[in-house]
Length: 185
Image (cartoon, rainbow, N blue to C red; front, side, top):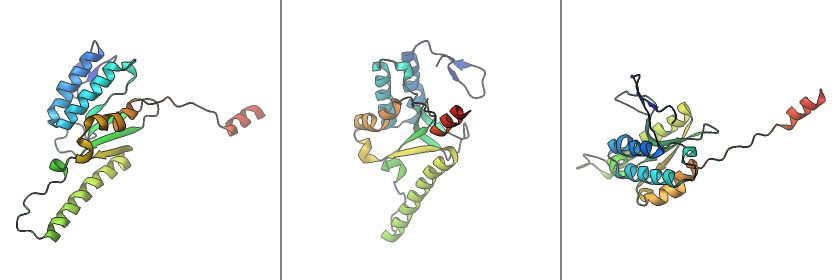
């Protein structure tokens, strides 16, 4: 955050003089537009976590509404949140999938149960195809949370997201083969 956030298509940079200033921007500008009560709650929990952390500058960013297609209006690849491990650059996406926005079927009046089940299966297949594509095309592992997990956002944050905000720096070890080659000369 020493340089700030870049604005696509502009030379201006958003600069933050403090971590708390960035967290306000994160919560009330970046996440607020999603309209999702779950995203808003998780953004609040993330901000509280960072603020209470002994070294808040070491906590990876929780990137909201991550889109690989950039500013294109129609997007296939979008995640509610993503964390990038600063040591390994492994990426983990968090997809909040309540039934109301990811599973609800419209216009089913007069349809047979078989047709409704086919529509639901097709809807599910499309969602899973997107998540597989994220991993295959962009090397982003996606964790998906449905209504059951979203009922308790505190537990979801503590048990599912927070571990990715506490990455350990991997130890570098020389392989035995490299050591043998080095010592044999």
